[in-house]
Image 1: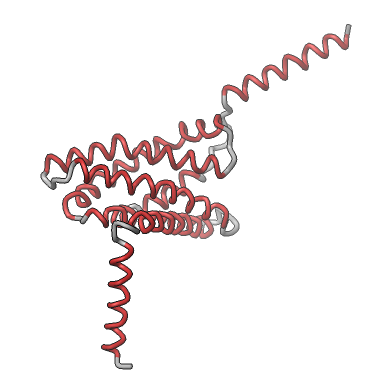
Image 2 (image 1 turned 45 degrees about the vertical axis):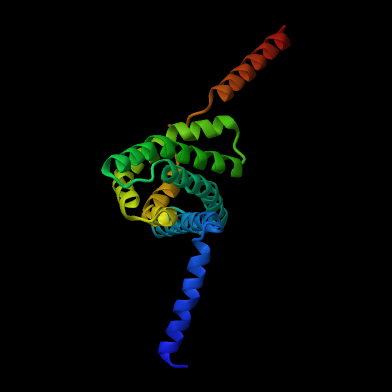
Length: 220
């Protein structure tokens, strides 16, 4: 088969896939799939770097799968968030775009980060105190990092990108942020700075006091 004919077949196949994948009927599945795939790719790249630096021994597949599942939940958030913004603020004027950027940074970004840590906490079977401690220690780091890229990227997104491609654009721009998210999520606290929750501290205190009382009774 001539090269030109093969190229036509490839173009026709891609065009049919594109029309289906980015149609209103299947756009949610496409956006969620993109978020899953790029979240897993970001973690894989981060783990490759960590292996290169001898920080980890080998590829942790469970970690990558968990990051992919977090991409699933975040993909839902992004899909419906962009639909909401485009429905209520459809214009592409500078005033509207700036307003959408501010809404995205002050509402969606914190919610997005919170959903990520909640999802990971459920997957890791952490209790609520452990989830809250991780959010306190790591969420602000991600949120401040989001401000370094988010406004400029969303300016392009809301001005020039068609609505059905917003999540696709956002995810490819955010691939570096996905890598950084994986690094922050699995970063370890320096020695001597490990914190415990209030409930755990109270339990240890009660255990200590009960042990002390038992010893006193035993001596008597």
